[in-house]
Amino acid sequence: MNGNEMKVGLLGLGCVGCGVIRALSRNQEEIERRAGRRLNIVAACARDLNKERDCDLDGIQLTQDPQQVVDHPEVDVVIELMGGIDPARELILRAIDQGRPVITANKHLIALHGSEIFAHAEQKGVNIAFEAAVAGSIPIIKNIRESLSGNRIEWIAGIINGTGNYILTAMEEEGRPFAEILAEAQRLGYAEADPTFDVDGTDAAHKLTILASIAFGIPLSYDHVHVEGISDITSENIADARSLGYRIKHLGIAKRAGEGIELRVHPTLIPRSRLVANVAGVMNAVVVKSDAAGAHLYYGAGAGGDPTASAVIADLVDVVRTLTTDAENRVPHLAYQPHALSDIPILPIGQVTTACYLRLQAIDRPGVLAAVTDILGGLGISIEAIRQREPDIQGADGSVPVILLTHEVPEDRMDQALSRIEELDDIVAPVQRIRIELLK
Ligand code: NAP
Image (cartoon, rainbow, N blue to C red; front, side):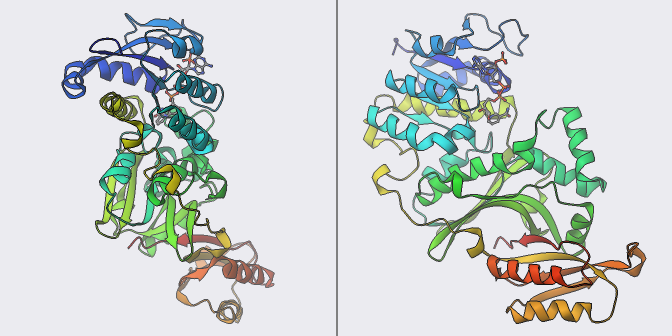
């Protein structure tokens, strides 16, 4: 450390990197009063040094080579805001080797390589902070890891991808199809040029992996998350949900269930009366249910330069405060002591039990519904509601949509039912299934 000043090396001058520079400069005095010392960015890197930046780079040594920032002789702490796996992974490991704490917003990297990074950091007594990796400005990591440490956490359900929530909200409010809203979101800059990770659930799965690990004290288990995206959700599904008192949200769910943990990202019908059902547009929200505290809802901006910088700087202040503490007395990276992680299994999706919304396209003939209910009844699946849509929306083939809500059923049993239903002559299209969560 250099006197009473903390010197920071910044990897990346993009949306979040510039947000950090702006907030550190705007709130310098406030932050210094909290941290007990001045936090100064002394070196930073970007690929293109000629690009116009939305922040003041005066006094910062700039380079195109991120390694120069990590190796900079004056740097006390490194902030990684480049994104992606390589070279971010090697740079973080290199900073750890030099005894420098690292702050990162890189959920992709932490979900896939966090175990390696934390093990290396623990060996070297170095702190790694990653609040900004999940839900942007919302201090969800700190809350689960520290404020709820007296609880047994039962489940977490989160709207943890703003782009997906923006699309579903606009589909409901404007009655327009998925592809049209996505194209518009890209035009307006709400969605990335390549929105794959946002709409196919990968980004939410990265964040869910981190949340589940700190909530249940399990290793980071990205490969075991069941992931479904939102691109098959239709305006009809959204209208059905509305008429039945539900709203469709793309949720990341981590839940204790019997002998294992469920980890899944998929579109979900949730009752409209739940607070989290009213989280609209690009906003994020996470509900955490624990035994003593009950249900908590955390809501806020999940992305953007300034909101994400808020979480990065909070980590920076925490790291500064703990620099002189013994490594073993710090809050563990994954909330639980590294030797105390549990080997409780992650359940395969077939063993997950949920209620379901089913949408069938059936030829409007006597006996079809009876055949469907026979199949479901034969497999012990009970039906909560059936709704046959009006004949005025009959398809050219004489088919009509039939909506069914079932009670809770193990997924593998529902799979069997659906394949038998789809074999019926009068069922003319694959059955659509969307899981239901009451979030009680
Ligand atoms: P971004 O706008 O794409 O910025 C990335 C920055 O890193 C750019 O300045 C880029 O340089 C620089 N960079 C990338 N590779 C480099 C390399 N090999 N050498 C030198 N510089 C390199 O990304 P972002 O949106 O700020 O996101 C940064 C991280 O925060 C990611 O891990 C992301 O997942 C995470 N995050 C972002 C948000 C958000 O709202 N954007 C929210 C939460 C978490 P150029 O500018 O010259 O291309």
